[in-house]
Amino acid sequence: MSNLPFIDLAAQQRRIKPAIDAAIAKVLAHGGYVMGPEVRAFEGKLAAFGQAPLALSCANGTDALALPLMAWGIGAGDAVFCPSFTFTATAEIVPWTNAEPVFVDVLADTYCLDPAALEAAVVAVKAAGRLKPAAVIAVDLFGQSADYPALKAVCDRHGLKLIADSAQGFGCTLNGHHPIHWADVTTTSFFPAKPLGCYGDGGAVLAKDQGLWNLMDSLRVHGKAVAGDGIDTGGHDPKYLNTRIGMNSRLDTIQAAILIEKLAIFPEEIVLREAVARRYAAGLAGSKAQAPKVIEGGQSVWAQYVIEHPDRDGLAAHLKSECIPTAVYYPAPMHIQGPYAGFERGPGGLPVTEAAAGRVLALPMHPYLEAADQDRIIGAIRSY
Image (cartoon, rainbow, N blue to C red; front, side, top):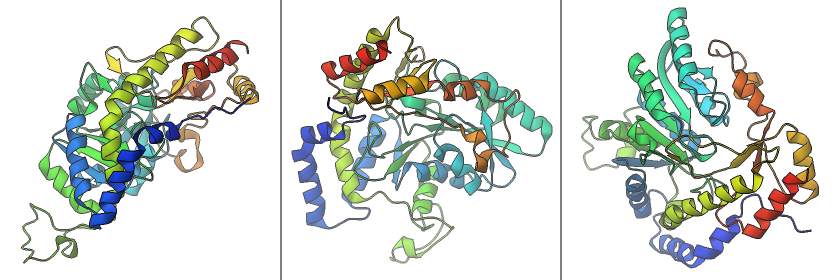
């Protein structure tokens, strides 16, 4: 019995290999390996796809989260509210700025940030007085949109910035709108396994405000002088005239060239992912496996297809014996892991998060999953 791939990146590469090879060859020919013309071209195409006025690429999805926090001046004494049921990067970047994460529970059906729990957490932090509420990071977990209308309402009431962490969900929509419609910025990752991934690391921030974009552009290139700094460069390269402390977080030109070709087929791949998700839902109906739910009016990009099962570990072992890979996102929520256990939590704790961590199981998911292979996966689940 052959092993099935969890994510089949090779199938996509076979489809667009001539275009990828030509794009890479073009970069090799012009030699602009860092911040070459493809970077700006990709940023323009990415912004247009994501319904945003502006896009800024960077080295990875983690830096994409850090850049707006740094540009807003969030730091010591500030609280940044985020889920615990997420990848480390969401919370990791908050202490980088000397701010503190406050962990908030998620909704039981979508696993995205619970607006009511967020409201309660913000009120509690304000009442305690030790921290000043500053920002919210909502996560488009497993590929679908968080409840941005409700989350934005909370942010507006309390004067908070809103980041849509769309590392898994870039391309998702809610009632036809991308998250940037509500959020101050949307961030994403181009890690190879993401729905829109490159062949290495990469990330981006979608933004609405030119001034914020300029600040993040400065920060990603060592704090270089940018428009609005009032610096006369005298014809010199602005990266040698530094107006703030920044970082080195540039997207490689070759990766930008690859992403241009991948973005061209991304809308079709979202449709293909939806078809795979629908086949799973139909095939698992009536079984002990609980299929995922998508927010009403939402279109997921299905970064993962995550079921719940009362005997998650037993099912995973059974599927492994059938040469079917699975993964657990996430076995240990952030708030119970050592480096993060001392940070504050919303009132009432995070019971939904803790329960989900023991039940979730991700199945193979990618746009090119053949129906026969999917039937094999469904059959193995139903036979357990």
